[in-house]
Length: 213
Image 1: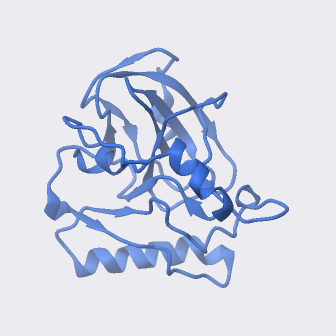
Image 2: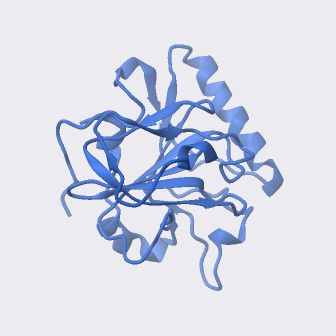
């Protein structure tokens, strides 16, 4: 499958400046104690920002195999762990605003309050695809309804604190979805290794939503 590409996209974190972004790879992180996942992530991200003081957004993770998804039953089944990441994460402080990539409408939204789940999530239906915005603040869901128009560069919401975003270090999980099936305010953000080829077709690389190209 060719990479999914769009032009004239408004970046989901706002006006794009390359010097403000640094791509990172979390596949090498290991935590012996699941309780330490958040502390370990926070320390790693803080170290990256200290090394690169001009950077505002750390991002990455599409199809990344992550070995630290061990703290929740959400990521396990009887046969395989779900540890292949299907979206891109953009790490930034809580309350950082996020924006619509182009004109569309609200497909659905929900507060997914399980441990290490999405927290507040909004799914926007754009003309050629759907986009899931996960780990938002609960306030981001106020005033929404299915079918509500949303316009390019309009603020969709803001990043949530740990206490409301599923228990994560604040970040945006942005995921491209071609077929929603019957999901409402939710969609798998991880798959097992054996499912990777299948989900690559449904969830192509959402990099253009972050970088605007």
